[in-house]
Image 1 (cartoon, rainbow, N blue to C red):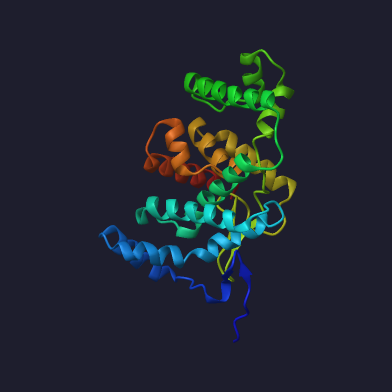
Image 2: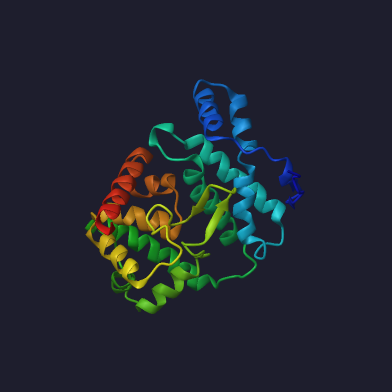
Length: 257
């Protein structure tokens, strides 16, 4: 079958090699043993993953070449931190990391400028949230943040929303013809239609999780933070974040099936 040429960021997608699961695993084993050439093969073999994610931002960035480089940084970070013992596909692990890197770049270099006062409020709100989280060890609402800061909940919502570059958690981000990745594919219903009953069940399941598990899952799949970011934020190891996330997802699955 002929391979059609499609260029994104000057890269001909028809010439990109896509690694099989076995090839990927072998390369990670080689990398673990110190084979530096394996890292380059892993990068080149996953460029299609980066390009697939960038297609979602094609109308929101003037320089896609720069964004491609940013996405590759996220890919490299994912390769550096991936652990085969986690028993998840590399693409599943890498998507949030690449996406987070791209979203941070767009947030920091967006042409739409947010006023300094709103940004200051947002950063103070984030600091207050972290302080309250450490004190109460539970998910903190914007109403609680507003009360602690002495401002309205609307002001907190407006400030925090100004920092977000949102993408639907049910939007397909990566599809190579067989492996489709969604932001919520690990906790959502795989059916095409998400009815009200399913959404209610999912919300109830989230509410029954332990506070730390709930916080990690909402930050990972609704906000788009990486395991490394959460580990640094909470003050525990990435391995602990991974275990808490996995346990939370398993508990949700048990409660909604």
